[in-house]
Length: 102
Image (tube, rainbow, N blue to C red; front, side, top):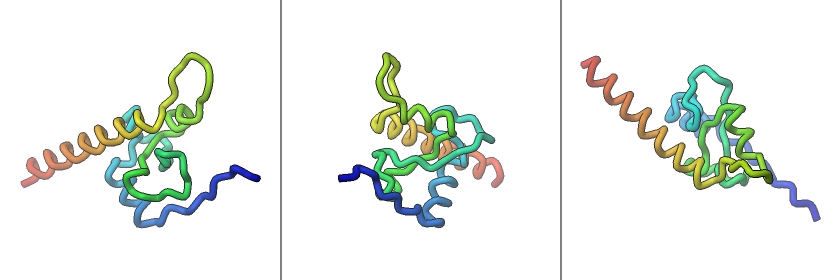
């Protein structure tokens, strides 16, 4: 029996929302302008619930795939913390910019 996970495409409007909320910036390293991907936090590519999706650069995304060794990988709990913090930072920045432009 195969353990291959079924990838369900992320709808374009949901992908756009996830990217916009994260300012197209990796939630871990915060370096804008890098190539990014939408990551399934629970590693189930069929679970396209918005709470399960976050934006990671290619380097940080690779750290979610590391297993073994002495280093700690970016596991689901840690990625969720980074995502929640980054989304708060982006919202606060946008709110401040909106106040300045009034």
